[in-house]
Image (cartoon, rainbow, N blue to C red; front, side, top):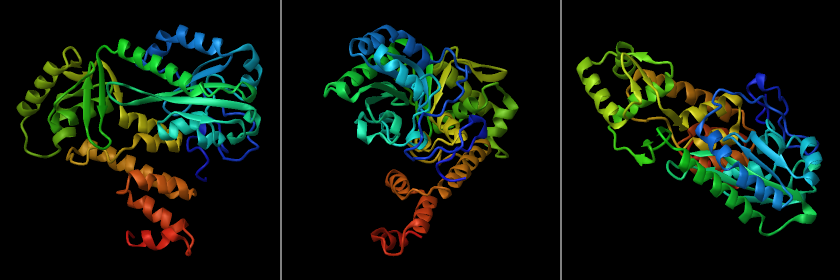
Length: 362
C-alpha cells in the first residue's frame, strides 16, 4: 500500500492518487455518531446567511469536517449538474491525498485561506472551476473544525472570492461562539491546554491526565480503574485521586459523573481527532493536528500505552510515504520526528543538496 492509498478498507476508496485521470472525489459514508455536535449545530445556525451568499454569487458552497469530507453543500442552478458529477456533495472527500491539488485540500493542509484557479486543479473534471476555501478555526480554543469552500466556473472568477469565503468562515466561527455551552476542549498534542465555556483553565498536570483518561473512556471508568490507569503500581492513595477529582468537579460543574466516572459535557479533543484521521489514513489532517507528542511528561500507564500505540501507527504511516516534499513539511514543524528524518534520508538521491544536511541527524 503506498502513501496515496487509504489504510481503512471500509472507506471503499483504494487509489487515492494525485493523478489527473480521477474524475470525481471519492464518496465516503457519513456517520451520525455526533448528529448534534458543536460544529454541526454551528452549520445549521449560520445556514441561511451562508446560503444567501452562495445564491447571490451564483456559486456552489460546501463545508467539510477536519478531514476534508463534505458535511453540507448547496449549489446554484448553473453549478448543480457539474457539482453532482464531481461529487461536490455530502460525503465527497476533497483532500489533496484524494484528488490532488484543490482549494479545500490546500486549506486543509495549511489552515490558511486558498484560491485555486481552473488550470491549477489537479483533477481534470474541475479544470473549468475556480475555488476559494477558508479554514474554520475555533476562536476560543484554536481547534481546527473544517473548511468552507465557494466554487464557480472560471468565467465568473472574482478577485473578491477569497474575501467572500472568509466572510463565510467568520459566520461559522461566530456561530461556534454562540453555540458553546458546556464545551470542554482538551489539547494534548504538544503543549497541553484545556478550555471550558470559552475560558482557559489553569490545571495541574495530573488533572489534565485525568481528563484525557476520561475522554478516552467515554463510557465511564470506576474509581479503582481510574486510579490504576493514572498511577499504575505507584504508592499513591485513593484519597489523593479523590481530591484531584473534587477540584476538577468544582472547575467543571455538572460535567463529571461520580462512582462510574464519566464526562457528561460535550468534549472536543485534538488527540481523538488525530486518531480518527489516522484510522482513516488521512495524512494531511493527521499531521495538521499533530503539534507534538501526546503528554510527553505523563507517567500514567494508560496514557503512555495510548501514546506508544499512536506513535507506532504514525511511524508506520511515515515509513510508507514516498513524497519528499511531504516529509520535508513534517520535519519543518516536527523536527523531533526522527522517523521522518530517517525516511527522508532513505528517499533522497545521493546527489541531493539535503542528503549531507540530514545525514548528521541519522
